[in-house]
Image (tube, rainbow, N blue to C red):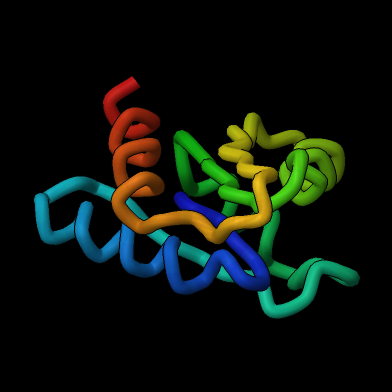
Length: 99
């Protein structure tokens, strides 16, 4: 599962579409608000073996998810003032699937 929120929606969606087109087993969820978290978020997260959270910061959402739901969420962070590129994100997600 790739979990995102905010400005990561576009690049995550493009990367997930590319990976699905290539036959990879991947799902996407995007939060509209993070306080409070959606009531069913814990149930959704428990359904997946791997959760990757791409963020344009140092991983604050991943920290909150780990603390609240005790899920081994993997952060993919970028802090350089530029948005994620879909190709770059797809490569990182492919590595998470394979690894």
